[in-house]
Image 1 (cartoon, rainbow, N blue to C red):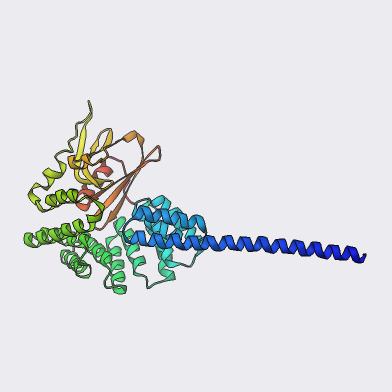
Image 2: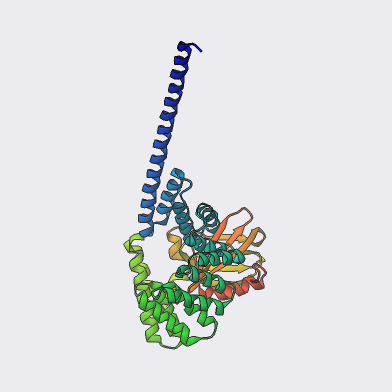
Length: 378
């Protein structure tokens, strides 16, 4: 090869290598910027979640994942918040992605377990939560989540055992005390359920749910003074927690309802009147049901399921819902401490969720079973 040709080949090679380095440098710069954006959005999401601004937190997490699709932390955080909002299918999908990226992370399996339980996959939930405990047997949350799954299918003795394991690991675990109180109540241990509720208030004196649970149990023991005291504390905490979310006038009106025990049902539900259609038979209706955090009446007829908002909520845009039985794809129930959620999936893939206290959930569940709208847990 001539010297001139050799020099030309060397120059060409150097040019190609130089271009490659420029492209590589540019790509590294893009990746670095994406990671920086990812961390910024993740940090914002944590702030929003801390302020209970879940919609804003979810939006930030989606931006974080867009910047870095393989960020398991953002995926898991998004799944956790989606679960809190009741979007269980999306929660499960995202936490599975996080588990695939970090298969040894115990907390991710714990989130997966609760999500699967909420969608009705009890066996999958158990497997995920047992995997979480196998990876980290010091995580009280995993034991409490597994206890909730066992309680969901009526295995209250197993649930109580697991809640006690969680408490042994974390003696200040409010959720575990409340869960244990519920499990002991199902097992007929009245003294145990009351003691656990007292412990929940002791470790979480600013928890509205803990005071409400204790007040309810005190009323069953005919301690009406104690029951009213705990109920008042619960309502005061709820008002304080809701102050930034509602207009002052709105809260004042609701606070009056909270304090006027004798008038609560008349004030909240007088406007939720239901008039059946021609030849329609009303099987039963239930008060103290909430749709999109607005109270109303849950009515089951021989042809449909209807939610009728109470008058005060209707003034603020509460939604009336009417679902024909023939359009129902499935109905699922999730028990929580002191209450639960009913999710109705229609054939057009719309999901309607209704929250209610345990005093309403239990008889409603029995009715849905008798009407063959849900199946008994196996």
